[in-house]
Image (tube, rainbow, N blue to C red; front, side, top):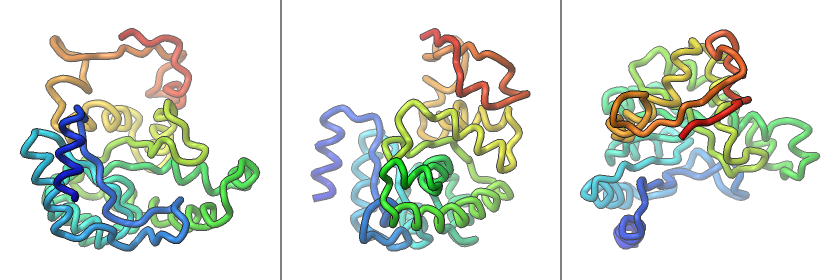
Length: 231
């Protein structure tokens, strides 16, 4: 089943395969820390995707799922909420990218989230997850792990197009603004094997040039208010 699904997606022209290695925060009755795919299922997806030259991203909150995904050979792990020292060590040893999605959790933890219709169980789970997520994010900065700006866009109160808000979270929680910008551009391209095509302004690469109202190195929130984008 997993092999067939992976091949079908590749045949349909996807650029990347994403898997769900653990439960989630917004799914009712789901335990974020519990592994949701068997080891052989993870192995099968990664094998098929890499054979076709496609990177694999893995949603994973819990340590067991993170470690299983890394052992299977994924290219990135999204969230890493309840990672342990062993989980982070496994990522470091395998040079697996850690895709941070702090903003998606932050926007679900407020009273405004409930007023906007976010279910109470989601807010409760997100509040618990945020504390662990920030602890993991800080711990990862002390290791040689590629940290990448992510969004988890499409979750409640987290629409597509808001990726620049994660830059703000990176700076708020320890990153230099220039390094935060790299985490959303060149480092992100590196971890998915696309460094020759995207992520840098160099001859031959695809590039969107963004005009901002001010210097993002002085105020990273300028990235949230682009004046123009040149494609």
